[in-house]
Length: 427
Ligand SMILES: Cc1cc2nc3c(=O)[nH]c(=O)nc-3n(C[C@H](O)[C@H](O)[C@H](O)COP(=O)(O)OP(=O)(O)OC[C@H]3O[C@@H](n4cnc5c(N)ncnc54)[C@H](O)[C@@H]3O)c2cc1C
Image (cartoon, rainbow, N blue to C red; front, top):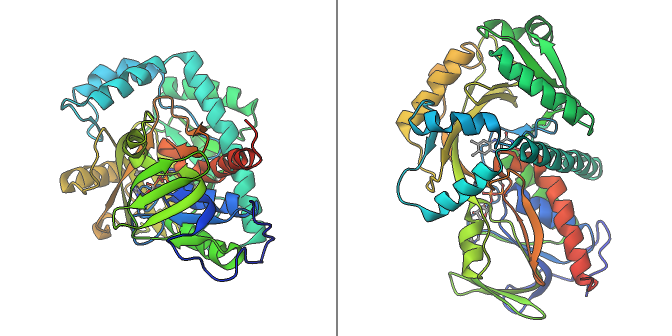
């Protein structure tokens, strides 16, 4: 049964107890993707439980990411250019890129699929598929905020990708043309044009030009998840269960039963897995394979420097993002493919700080950097997420890689549409 919840009404009288409760949907994982999915389901009148092993929302990869809502820059990671660079990268040419070199069959299989995605045709297909989802996400976020405005440092900051190499800028310009034909708002600007829009770029050495995405936005993903969960509880009576690690699930014909590591059980008609980088291991326990590999990244936050950019900037050669978020500078980068821990390696953090300083020395006050943070991007080989019904009562919303914050709202809409077709018994 689908509860006929209207906005502002409670689905059920009182909050259900965990044991014995039956939900239309159980969303597993309360990162930005899971929280957005809970909203998309609840706003369709479904009774929803949202579960996470951590003691609050968005404490995994969603916590302190680069904060970019990168609606126009959806370029897939796999490309001929990166395939050519791989041997040098494996030999350590980029201090902020690493591949775990130990024996790891999962990494090897993923790597083969990734290499297969490095053709022009696959790169273009992945980029456009992600662009379509990003544009849906923008619409869905704006619609949410129109109904339920809340503060998470959200603004239309615009975004510039900086290129020092004219050939790389030329290649990016070709992709801009393709994406513009599919709805992306992006322009290629000369260095002078870019500096006139963002004077902080005067400190960028050897700038050849930029790709400018004026409609791209920013926001704090952790604050977003907290604010959204308030809406979910207040307006939709969504039940949230934190500090609950789910160790297994039984997929029955009519229901899904989840068991918590602490002995709890919870039952729903449909399970949506939104476990980020942990999705692959969890699904394997259900006999389902999903090619999700973690790619560890780092961020740090510091007071603004004397010449801080207001527009978000990505130094494409160094692969570092600079974002002015609520009066502070968030800087993110580093790609460690196959790393599964979230420890902050102090030497690597120091390298990221140094690299950011060499890129834009006055963007932040680098003498007052916070403790730093590391998170695991849930990568698919094609860079496109997997939003699919894999079993009758199992839907996955996983593999958002480098763009999970950008894509969360649109992915949630797609996952909720799959639930509705489940509920009405469509094949
Ligand atoms: C350094 C860095 C910078 C980034 N910058 C950007 C950016 O600027 N823009 C952008 O769009 N994206 C960015 N990303 C990517 C983005 O952060 C991720 O794609 C996104 O956060 C993934 O969200 P998620 O909800 O799928 O996963 P998560 O946020 O990781 O959520 C998964 C949740 O599942 C929970 N969980 C796991 N196992 C269990 C279990 N067994 N039982 C219960 N709960 C469980 C975890 O506790 C976690 O809360 C960045 C990522 C990194 C690391």
